[in-house]
Length: 110
Length: 113
Picture 1: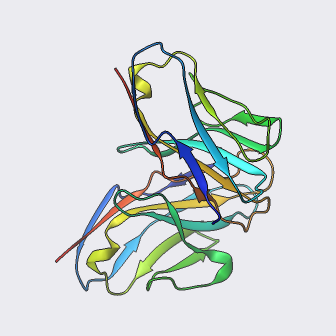
Picture 2: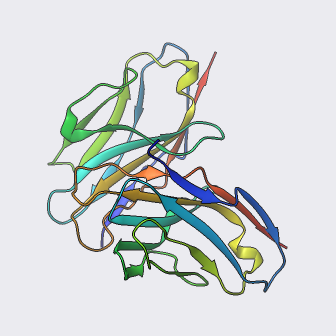
C-alpha cells in the first residue's frame, strides 16, 4: 500500500539551529516529491518540488531513492519558518495520486 | 488571479442537516480533491476527481458525497452531518501530470453540534 510517513509530529529548534524534517515513502514506481507548508491561519502552499532542484527560503530537499526518503533541510532556522510541513509524493496521473503525509509542526524558538 | 475558492469559510450546523461546501477553481485544472485536516492526523483525502464526471473515493469517504458536473466546480456534500465530521476542510486542484503542484483553497472550518 502507498504510504507516506513523517515520524515527527512536532519538531522544536532554536533560531539559528539546523533543522531536518523527515519524510519516507513507500510507493511503487517513481513518484515526484513535493513539500508543502502551511503557515498559521493560511492555506497550504507549495514550498518546493524535487524536480526543480531548487532552494526556497533556504530550504532544500534531497531525494534518496535507495532509502525512499525526501528529507527537508535548512541550515539555520528562522522564527518565521514556524509552520506545518507536509511531504507529498505524487505518483501518476491515474487514481489517488496526490496523498499527503501526516505533517510535522516546526516550532522555531527565539 | 488564479485561485481556488471555497465557501463558506466557517459553518456551524446541527446533526443531520444537509450541507454543501462549494469549491471553484479558475485555472482549468483537471484534477480536484477534497481533504480534511484534523490535529495529529494531518491531511486525509476524502474524494478526488480526475475530470468532469470522474470521481473516486480517497481514504476517508464515509459520510461524504461529491459531484463534478463542470470542470471548475467540485462541491462536497454532507447528506447527514455528524459531530465526527467537525473538521477543517480543504479543496485543491492541479493540472494533470506528476510534476504539477496542487493549489489549495483557503479552507472551511465546519462545526457539527
